[in-house]
Amino acid sequence: ALSVAARRAAAVMLALAGLLAAGPTFALPTHAPVPGGVAVIDLGPAAAGKPTARWNEQPLAVVADNGRWHALLGIPLDTLPAPLEITVTGPDGPRRLSIAVGVKNYPEQRLTIKERRKVEPDPADLARIEREKAHTDRIKQHFSATGPEATAFARPAAGRLSSRFGLRRIFNGQPRNPHSGLDFAAPAGAPVRAPAAGTVADAGDYFFNGQTVFIDHGQGLISAYMHLSRIAVRPGQRVAAGELIGAVGSTGRSTGAHLHWTVILNGTAVDPELFLAPP
Image 1 (cartoon, helix red, strand yellow):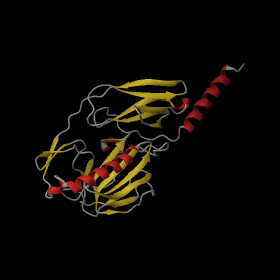
Image 2 (cartoon, helix red, strand yellow; image 1 turned 180 degrees about the vertical axis):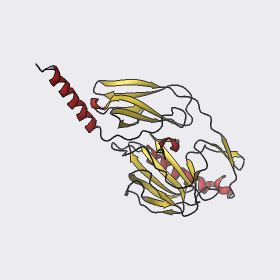
Image 3 (spheres, helix red, strand yellow; image 1 turned 90 degrees about the horizontal axis):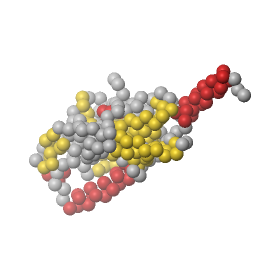
Image 4 (cartoon, helix red, strand yellow; image 1 turned 120 degrees about the vertical axis):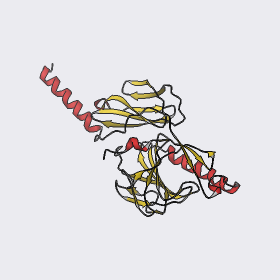
């Protein structure tokens, strides 16, 4: 039989092996279990082996931080303040966890758009919008098994934060979808940089979003950069944190030059400020 000291040494070595297998640690997004927020869910010690997590049929990102596994659940803006259930599967089989969702009220924003078609699209525009939505929905639902390298993002552009996430938007007196991202007030032509490493999932021109770049960071964490004046990357290209991906502009439905930055987690847009690393 092993001595007490030998058993303790073996336990320490097993724990260290588990931590090394879990990969490097990194800062988690801010825990904000509200509509439009992110729930950071502790799944247990990293030494136990990486579990999987799902919300309904949607796989969730599972990352290691400080020796523990965490699931990241993006909560849709239209979620009611009631518990959500996720399923976690590990070495001991599946288990269910209940996530309480709180209340958050977002303010209203009224905007005037000079180009009527951007508020009341004609039939040809509507057909284009429908095609583009189907295309971007596929991008947003993509889930890769690896990544992300980081969830503490750098700011993709310089400038003050103008329109925050979740604003209830009214264009020319007509209610429209809430603001799905975070706006940076920056001049036309200002550089836009990748806030973290990833792969360019798409780059193109959209009716509402204008010239847009999507970056897939891994495990359902995807970011998008809209209204660009110039795109500096191509689909399939691997980009490093801080790499130039485009320039600020005012293409698509826009009231002036700015960067609209969207962060998507498990197929839903969430508040990008929750991912910003401390200055």
